Amino acid sequence: MIEVRHLSKRYPSGSVALDDVTLDISAGEFVTLIGPSGAGKSTLLRSINGLVAPSAGTITVSGEPVTDASREGLRNVRARVGFVFQHFNLLKRLSVLDNVRIGTLSRIGLWPSLAGLFPEGESERARRALRRVGLAGLESRRADTLSGGQQQRVGIARALVQEPRVLLADEPMSSLDPALSRSLMELLQHVNREDGVTVIASLHVLDLALHYGERIVGLRAGRVVHDGPPATLTPAVAATIFGDARA
Amino acid sequence: MSRASRSGAALAIAAALLWSMWSTDVSLRRLVEGGPFMLGFIRRMLPPDLSVLGQALHGALQTLQIALLGTAVAAVLAIPLALAAARNTSPRWLFYCTRSALNVFRAIDTLVYALFFVAAVGLGPFPGVLAVVVYTTTVLAKLFSEAIEAMDPGPVEAVQAVGASRLQVLRWGVLPQLGPEFVSFTLYRFETNIRAAAVLGFVGGGGIGFYIQTYLRLLNYPAASTVLLVLIVMVMLVDYTSSRLRARLI
Image 1 (cartoon, each protein chain N blue to C red):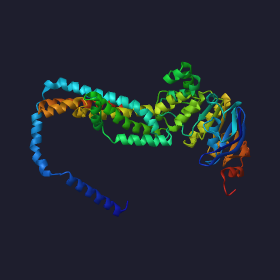
Image 2: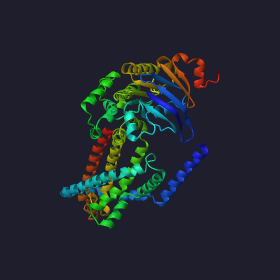
Image 3: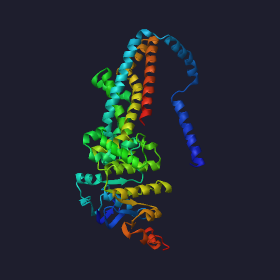
Image 4: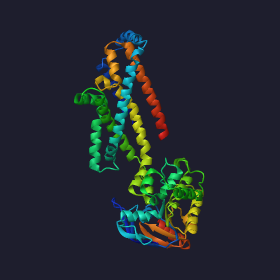
């Protein structure tokens, strides 16, 4: 489903975010990505939908290339890859419904989309996505009047309405409190199990990864240092990933 | 700041104020002696001569039109200039050139531009419009470019991430962030331009200022006071409407 081959990313500042990462992720997997901040989790996720252009290596999603893709090709890949951001990245002044309908832009014609004329079917899909994340009734509220947890649910609904094959979540819980984190992780788990959507979520909290991850990939200094089910993540392995000097 | 540098700064400010008072011939005696004249001036303005109300309204309307047209044209011209003058949308060399040029032209006020355009294209409201356009363009370009620099790149990225095209990203990622701010800045400048356009007539730039100046020169104070009253009402109406609109936008 997702093939990452020898991926490296060096930023112009000289810092190395990814160093020869190779990873295969099959359809329907629920992968959690862990590692200290600066380990390259964000860069890896953002490379998969082409928000970051790697320095070397290749990525394909469902056999379609992401690296070196044409503008059109990249848009087609992105259309089926949902992305949930750490800071939600909603349009604050727009309504909740409009924020979710943004997820349908790749499917509707250019002129109607510029005029804000969404087909009724797409609006209905957006309302359904909002019901699914538990925000029915808030459609016409301005996005910035919602709480943090609600805003992240809008972010998830925006990704769901894309009807994605893959859902990438970049530390989706790190701006939220632990109780909210668990309920949102369960939401991602439902999406994975019921719709068969492949989920890759980076997490900064180890116990969320242990509890919800089926496969845990540990990154350290841009390299994959662990890859396996939660049971294999022993304290010694965790220490390797997080660089605990006492281990 | 240390205690020594604070008292040093206080001394410097006090010295600058005293020096300015001395240079500008500030004199309490002359102010007191001028008091009866000021009172007399106001007494001579009353009651207002309402027979010139038609002229006053005509002048006010023209001032409104100068401000409206000048601000609207300036808002359109300011958008490409703002893109060139914003750090995050413009190459370094273009950014510095545009910023410097804007700073130079913004140093000159609307009234000075009016003198220039009256000389260039002749008397009347047209040079007034040109003056408003030039000065307002430089101000709005600065304000717009700061809004562009302060724009949150996150939502723009989110719209790109759903597979939207470039135009769709502009429409749904950029416009919702910048549109209300641009309109709000433009309305604010429109309020200011009403005041600026009201004095353009003093230098031949048309509008209500022409009547104010003419009646004052003719020593026809009752007529001048009617024109001033119309100006006050117009400015208050525009301020009220425009600030209500701005409050709803943001």
